[in-house]
Length: 405
Image (cartoon, rainbow, N blue to C red; front, side):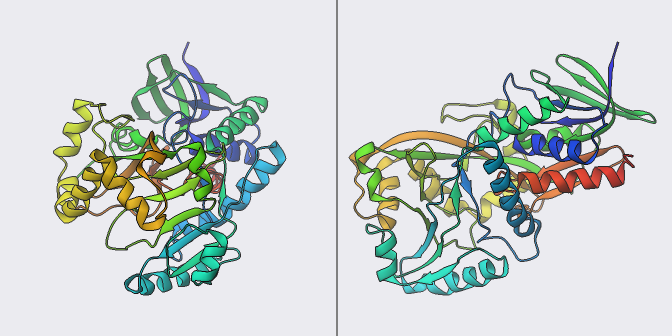
């Protein structure tokens, strides 16, 4: 017999689990099931990230990212405290290396102030050296409430709460088809069929493919382009060189931040990531290639237009990916004392970035849908920080759209 539920949530990452949690809180009697294609939860973007609890410096005023990051951070901090999950606050320094970067630093300060970043300061070289003695820079923004957490531990804590509240979590259930009809949605999976009155898809790296199962395709539909980011680890004796998050001033002409330093919740210090095209959506090594994924990316007009626009930046990123010496030189711009023998190749993550047909990146969170379905079409950083706020927005939208009594 086909199982029947009120709401099925596709995706057992941090956003899908947070959405299920917020929906359960708002509607305790709903029959809710979370479907995850892997055997474990939170194994992709939720488990392959630097762990930064973002304070909201970078995001355009009025955007979903700006609003949900601020609210999500507060929600995350309260959740972590109540569940005994440690957060450290090393703080973040965004440093300008020369006078050419000062106008961009000033613009960033305006944006961060508008976004209500807690404790924000603009500081000079003496204060930079006081906070981070080995750092380069002539001017900086200091965000003392930028934190570090283990986001996979957070996601698994969400899952524990869901299980305690009788929400079914079914791993090893990869969705293969979605069929809408007058009474609901038939969900075909690799482990059987499920009948849901409504569906919320939080599919991350597979978001566009899940949307395509419901007919949300066409020339104007964005597509996920995967970017792999590789990190280096500082050897234990070099970790004392940097104790704060140390970031460059972002350049609005380019889509990614550039190499930065992140002290981690486990005591490690990571440097990175770079940003190169991933040859597999879920490929965390240089050698990982999925011919279907690669072909879909290389034949997508949106990616080709993006690549033409940023080919110089892309070439530099690829060179740093291949050359440790080039990577270390980039690190030394911000931390001159670091040496090549003090870094080791570390982990990688893959960012699911929605790209439009015209070659522009979808910069904000993109949530929407039609009929009996809601989709998270784009949720890159700071989605983990914002997860409970994104979950509340999706839950509220589902309650209104689906008339969930």
